[in-house]
Image (cartoon, rainbow, N blue to C red; front, side):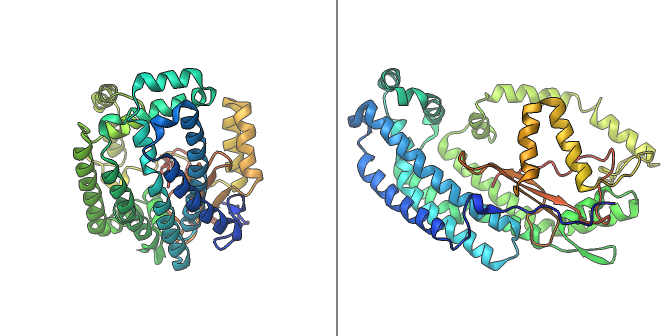
Length: 389
C-alpha cells in the first residue's frame, strides 16, 4: 500500500513569491525597458562596436534572456500544477504573450551575429576574454546560418508563435488534463486511465484501451496541424528532412541518426517482435492486443511502493552510480522542489523543468496517494516521459 500521508508539493517562491508579486511585476517592467534599450543600442551596429562592444552586448543579452526565462518558468509551473484553473490559465497565457512581445526586440541579435564575417569573429574571440568564454555559444548560434530567414520574417514568426504551435500544444495539454474516463464505476483522469493499461486484469486493460481511443479525433487534428506547421517551417528554412532541425540542435549529423535508427529497426525481429510474440503466447493467443503491451507477465509479483521506499530506491540508484549526484538528488527530497500527488487538473505524466541557471529545477510527478493506482515490479516504465515546457 502507498502512504496515506502528505506527499511533497513544490514551493515556487525561489522563482517568485506569487503571480501578483511586486518582484514579478518589477522584472517584467525592467525586461521591457532593457530590451528596448538593447535594440536601440545594438541593432545594425554589431560590426562597428568591435570585440568589446559585442562582448558587452552578449552579457546584456544573457541577463535579459535569463529574466524572461525565469518569468516563463514560473508561469509554466503555475499552469502545470492545475491546468483546469481559469485563473492559472489566464496568468500563463497573459505572461507568455507579454514575454513574447518583449523578446521580439531581441530577435535581431543572433541574426546579426550570424552575419559577421567568420575570420573577423575568430579574431575578436582570440583577443577578448569575455568572447572566449562565450565562444561555444557563438559556435552553436552560427550553425543555424544556412537556415535563418530575414529579420522581418523571423520577428513575424516569433510574434505569431503564441497563436500557432504554442496554442496547439496548450490545447493538447488542457484537453488531456480535463479528460475524465468512465472506468471501474468512477471518473478517472488520463493518468489514472493510462495506469489501467498495466492492470493485472485483462478486462480492465481492454476497457481502458477502448475508452482512451474514443478521443482520437481531436488528438489527430492537433498532431496533423503541428506536423503541417513543421513541414512549412522546414521548407522555408531549407531543412532537408523532418528530423534535421532537431539533429542540428543536438549537434549530430543526420547520417549518424540514420545509422542508429537502422540498427534499431534491424533488431526488431530478434527483440521487440520476438518479445511480443512470446507475451501473446503467455496470454494464450497468437497476437498481442495493444491494451496488453504494458500488462504484467503472469508470474510477476505485484508490489506497492510507499513514498519513502520509492525515495530510497532513487537515492540508492544515484549513490551506486555517483555519490556526488546522490547528494544533489537528496536536496530535491529535502526541499519543496517536487510536486508529487496525483490530482485532477494537474499536467499528466511527469517532467523535470530546468528553470534558469540561478534557480534549481523543479520536478512534477504523478504519484498515487492510495492503492487504487499502483506500480508493479517488472511493469514497463510508462512515466519516464520528460516534458520541457
